[in-house]
View (spheres, rainbow, N blue to C red):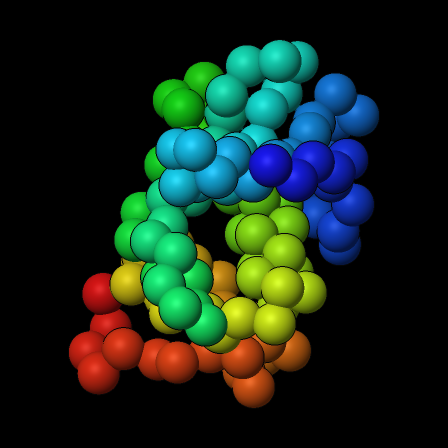
Amino acid sequence: MTENSASTEDTFRPDVSTTRNDALHRYELHVGGKLAVQARYIDKPGHVDFIHTETAEQFKGKGLGNVLAHFALDDVVAAGKRIIPHCPFIYGYLRKHDAYNQCVDWPEQPP
């Protein structure tokens, strides 16, 4: 499991932490110790396939999904793997942040 204090261009409260939970195959963002956002993935040889991102109701609309996406995508790239965005949220994030383009294997059809 990797852990990091979130630091991106997105704004957030200081009690936010991000982790990669390998046992549950998801990236997690916690606020004050509570799971706020999770991005589920399938780990494949040379790739990480993002399949679903979910934000807990009380944390929606705060930009926390963007913080987790940034952390997760940076983690995948740092591991030397490629990104497959089958998750609509991750797909949309990647379309807005072209710095990851060289590391993405786009699905044939948008999710």
